[in-house]
Length: 133
Figure (cartoon, rainbow, N blue to C red):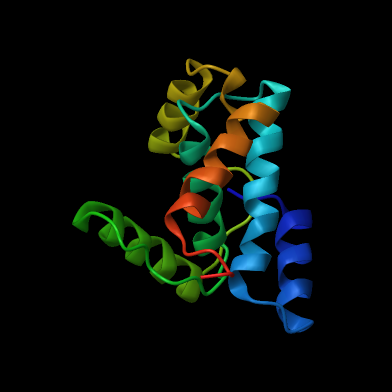
């Protein structure tokens, strides 16, 4: 579950008129910090980003659904529904939450290095058209 300080900062961003993806950036940033601190790991920078976006949806940030697999879209819809009905913050105590946390703790911690995040940011940028074209 997302921390209250992160939720508060994201809600402030929304009230200032910033886009939902900018507000969700707070959750992604915090998730990357968790991996770097060694709180848990991630298999790739993309996984850390996905976890942050999922937390943002569950906290009530109105993000667009991803344009990926049906399973991912289903999970995003479920997260958004939770965020709309009863956004939760704080720690999760469910068995499933504990299992997820213990699985993430077994993952590598070096996947959110500066170089790895730079590669992740550059890969979609290569697919976009340049401004000069």
